[in-house]
Length: 87
Ligand SMILES: [Zn+2]
Image (cartoon, rainbow, N blue to C red):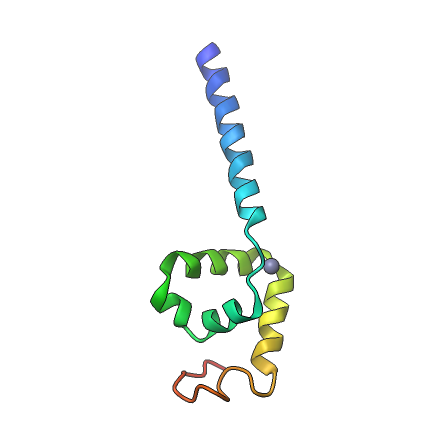
């Protein structure tokens, strides 16, 4: 029984730490969001791309901010005619 208890406690601790690590991931700043949106992050830093994807999935604030950045005049597209618009 002791082994089972240790396993359960260890799993709970790992779960808690995992939650904290994900939760403490900083909000990407505007520049990060723009590069993410433009596909630059995906090309240059796979792990950062995945982190931002995961962050956006759980953070309404950053999703809203990304929407704002996309709508902003002079935002993505204005200075980078090479990027593919996805909207
Ligand atoms: Zn956020």
